[in-house]
Image 1 (cartoon, rainbow, N blue to C red):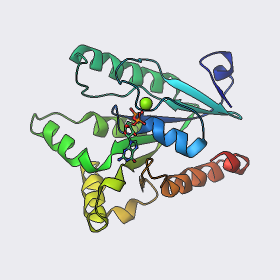
Image 2: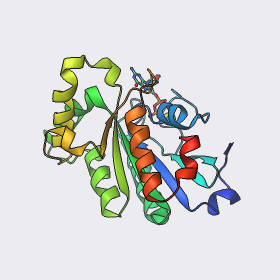
Image 3: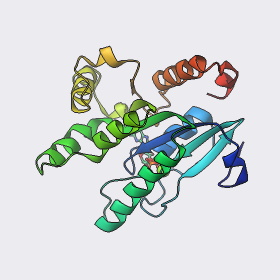
Image 4: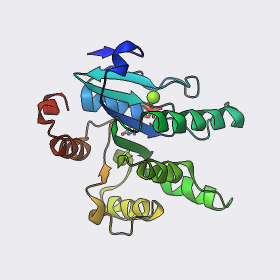
Length: 209
Ligand SMILES: Nc1nc2c(ncn2[C@@H]2O[C@H](COP(=O)(O)OP(=O)(O)O)[C@@H](O)[C@H]2O)c(=O)[nH]1
Ligand SMILES: [Mg+2]
């Protein structure tokens, strides 16, 4: 297993990208899912470049976090967003799976805050954008360990609705995976990823996911 940004990256024909705000747990999820070492909890907003890990011919990309970060200027946030959009457009052909990672418990509040300013929240915008460029996009609703068991379904219904997927969320179980990278509860996402690998006749990669 290697981490690289170079030559080898160009020979990859199968990529999965993790997209989401800073601090939602993208790096933690990658580490839990694939066992690759990626920096977790590193001060956000410093890196503009995607971070790559490689397993066999599968390229795993940890995108820079977008959205508000305290101490990071608005302009830099726009630059991050542009970089992400360009990267996705440039590599759309080999990006087979997109994983939009959200902080489940705080997602509704973030969306409502944007709505009140009559703007489309970046998360929602990214979700539509990824689908528009033809990337099969999953939603990892992370940090569900913070949510009481009986409050999970209502929250997931709300998240689905905010993403334009009419509740109940169970209708979208092929897209939405409630997870907790912290507790190592990632089975739901693992299953969805394996489904995709299977569809692409890449069962050989199961041993890595
Ligand atoms: N409670 C909780 N905290 C988490 C979870 N996943 C990640 N974190 C924490 O959230 C912070 C950001 O995680 P990180 O993986 O670096 O997020 P990234 O910026 O999206 O890559 C770290 O302090 C993690 O320990 C989770 O499932 N539950
Ligand atoms: Mg990270």
